[in-house]
Image 1 (tube, rainbow, N blue to C red):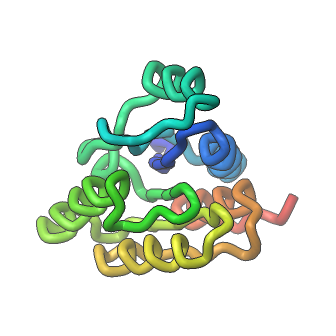
Image 2: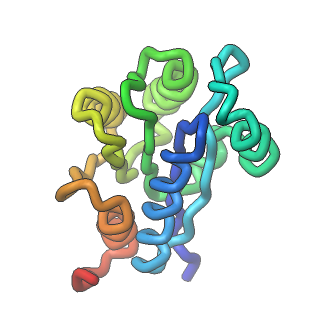
Length: 164
């Protein structure tokens, strides 16, 4: 049987949310799912000078999420930057992709989650966007990204894993 896949989409300028995304990805691996890390960006992002080196590394190491990524996975985890919304410059193109996929009914049966970057409004807005698109949203129990990733992985693998 093929290992179920989870797309972990994150937005990061300086690497902080990348670290959170990695923790969520490790959680999915703990649940025996296969994570795919994808980076949200756009050309007009203003990058602080102290983050320029990290930004260039991110550009080399990651690709943006695509429709085939999402279609080929059983779950989607979003790790937005604090203050980001589905209508922000970074969030809007991705949410538009999800909206198109929802209209085409390619998201049926998929699990979704939003990892808390420290801003409840960001979590609420992205969780709402996932719900509208038809994802079964798994809410976090606290701000432990690894535990949240494990919960998503367990939901798609169909196992109950004890807490670590």
